[in-house]
Image (cartoon, rainbow, N blue to C red; front, top):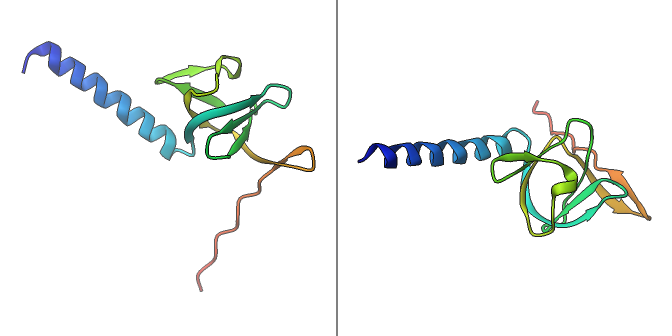
Length: 103
């Protein structure tokens, strides 16, 4: 294997690993369906919605991007977004369900 192919393979593997780790570290991956810039909410194609909070990070093609740079159809990893749902004309925070305790 030539050095160039080895370097390319190493970069591809590193980028794949980075995206996988971002999703596993509490991030969500999906395709942007809609943006509500008034409420700072991203709606993904699967219907999940995330409000931007100060520590929210968007990753597109392995690079962090700003909310304003997102476009419908873009595949994005969202880290530290606030999960919300739209109800009665407002975005409401989705509370994580409690884990059952074992006895």
